[in-house]
Image (tube, rainbow, N blue to C red; front, side, top):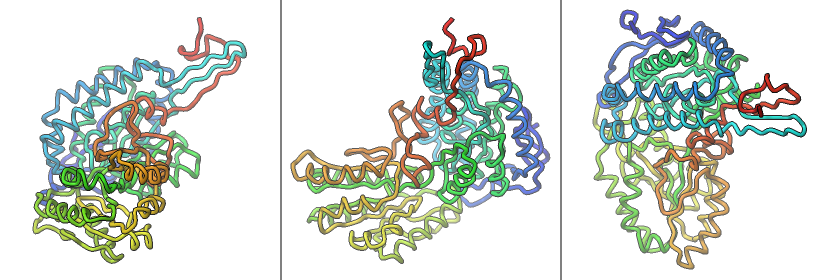
Amino acid sequence: MKNDMSTAQIFIEGSWQSSAGSKTFQAVDPRTGEAVGDAFPVSTWDDLEKALAAAAACDRTTRDWTGDRFAALLDAYAEELEARREEIVNLASQETALPVAPRLNDAEFPRTVNQLKTAAGEARDASWANPIVDADNNIRSMYRSLGPVFVIGPNNFPLAFNGISGGDFAAAVAAGNPVIAKAHPAHPGTSRLLAECVEKALSKTGFPPGFVQMIYDVAPEDGLRMIRDPRLAAVGFTGSQKAGVAIKEAADALGKPVYVEMSSINPVFVLPAYLEDSGENLVGEFSTSCLMGSGQFCTNPGLVVLPPGEATPAWIEAVRGRFSEAATNPLLAAGVKTSLLDSVQRLVNAGAELLTGGQAADSSGFIVQNTLLQVDAATFLNDPETFQREAFGNASLLVTTTDISQMAAIAGTLEGQLTGVVYTTEEPGDEAVYRELEPVLRRKVGRLLNNKMPTGVAVSPAMNHGGPFPATGHPGFTAVGLPASIRRFAMLECYDNVPEHRLPAALRTS
């Protein structure tokens, strides 16, 4: 049984157990605002203590296992997910209002399974560990697991970024680390189904209790206490800047590895000749990208900087029409709705003009009108901190310039971002502006795109889904892109004059 009366159990120490916590919550259907499904517990320190002890004990058993063992687990997990595909995507849709097709069944579910299988391949290959043998000096080194990892998933990707199935999870396991996952309260039922699948995979592949564990929610003070606990080796987090900074501060105080993905407005710069030549196509491309998934992608284009000229007003009006006419869809949670409305009001108070939207829709669900705002470059440059704060959801801010040099000036004021885009031609005028803009923008973004919206994040070994603070906590790491993402959850181990029989297998020469 997974339920004690009407309250779900947590998955710790290799079994489903009742939480020590007395507080509970339910998932809410964003379409209606009504609670759905079972009650789920808010874990207390007692739960976390048990999970930490089990993970630490498990690590002592698995730390010397070869990559084949972890690959087998990831492959088995992918198979279990495939067997329950329909059930998983249907419940994820109910809890998030994301459509079954094409979003969950045709895109996110296959991506999730592919991530696990790709991570399995990297674990089996083990080249990510970069073993080095200096035979002359009898010194050898390689990357290896570092210990239990706490993975905290976001609300906007219930499968591909879930704490118990997403990219951070896959990378941590591929490196050989036990994982304690925190589900997101927006989709606890979906996370329970995923944990049931991993439970079967753990059993099939002979893993000890505690290698993968999951809680649903925890009070912030207990979560931070867990992060400070010496038994926890590292943290992976995707979510809000407020929570991410608190987690980073707690981990940084101890020198503990922490990888946080937080906020990003993903600026788009449109150069003059491109707008003249291809502005009509860009209307649809931008509108689709911005409103896709109600704008709840971490690479949503939340800021568009437009060139001076006669083409700009017409382009803005065309986009305004698209936003006004496009269907609105639910946001993920009541808090997302409140935050978006507050963010829009903050931009208006700072001097932005509301072109369309900006209000809650006439619905009991978590729906906000598609929102488009506009501000001139001088006003933006006078208060860039306010105008570049993320408005998470189906909204974007257009910045109009009166001098092309303002583009580089705006780029220079930006905080770190996941992505930055330049739409440009190879005509001399655009090329000259690009050469001034690119060096400034390049320092601000993890991924630079030309003539392409940033919302797609391919699972490619060359992908960087990261960027300078506050997009993430460190500019040198990526949350997507294997094998690079695996090394976040690894330590470089060096062996000096250690006899052959005591070395990891990858460092032996005979």
